[in-house]
Length: 338
Ligand SMILES: NC(=O)C1=CN([C@@H]2O[C@H](COP(=O)(O)OP(=O)(O)OC[C@H]3O[C@@H](n4cnc5c(N)ncnc54)[C@H](O)[C@@H]3O)[C@@H](O)[C@H]2O)C=CC1
Ligand SMILES: CC(C)CC(=O)C(=O)O
Ligand SMILES: [Mg+2]
Image 1 (cartoon, rainbow, N blue to C red):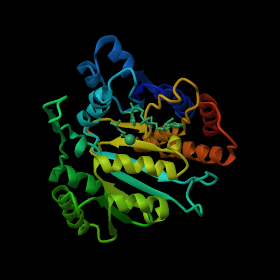
Image 2: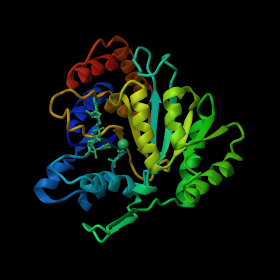
Image 3: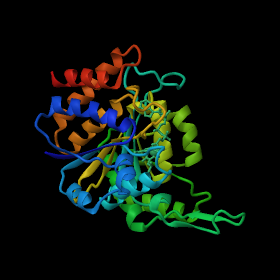
Image 4: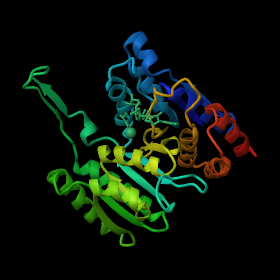
């Protein structure tokens, strides 16, 4: 297996080191190439994602990413120029974000409800597409736009992936989350697409929630969700909330997946580089470790992925307080290797 590793910035470096310890214990001998992309490279050379690096990344089986973003670089430069560019160039149109409340993990929600759903967040379009601009900057007449791009092609392919995903789950229930009462053009395209594709998946039951209501239900009744399909921005926001209700953002894993497998998929924790705790070994690396498990599952190493998930489940049950990042990594590596 050829794996590209992009530790990135802040806690990305720390959680990636811990996650690789677990990978090495479970799948020894992976051919890893580390790429020092992010704030260090940008501040040294002004480069974000050199063409030669992108070409090398295309030849890998998968990419493991820590997190991108640093206070030393203006907001958006690394996020757009590196992270989103990777997702767009590699056509990661499914941003797969599972949320599961592991036994023994405290949730802030009353009654400790069962939580087990997966968000299919569109990964290449929406308001993140880069279709915007500014007029009369720094004047009282400034106008800034960030236009959401929703193509029939782009919406249909992620919707199909979500239905395929729903078919593999016990409940086979799919919820479209959007805001079609206000975003009438994009919302209508999503709504029609889901209903048209649904005809090919008669076993899948359907629901629709406006995104504002979905934030209520994620807190008051998260058990209603099985598969959620939504756009890039709504999916970004909902999955941080989902992480928080399922025990913390430090547990939330994700995959930027190209289901056609024409490019390597990229696995990363849902969280960012957390400058507030960076360099202190305070970050929980579990999200990065579970992202490794998602990666192995994607690559067909299902038994190895299951071993990591089992080790995480047991570890979470026995936790009595915080541990340093690397201590958690070493604990999980030991548990997953035996
Ligand atoms: N995929 C990526 O690379 C992402 C990058 N970012 C970037 O990261 C930087 C910081 O963004 P924020 O909005 O602060 O989001 P963040 O996710 O980095 O942090 C939000 C909060 O969660 C905590 N947190 C995050 N990961 C944690 C972990 N593993 N263990 C314990 N606590 C954890 C942080 O300490 C902070 O209080 C920005 O530059 C942002 O653009 C943000 C989200 C995703
Ligand atoms: C930093 C953004 C580009 C991405 C983000 O917040 C996410 O993918 O969760
Ligand atoms: Mg996010």
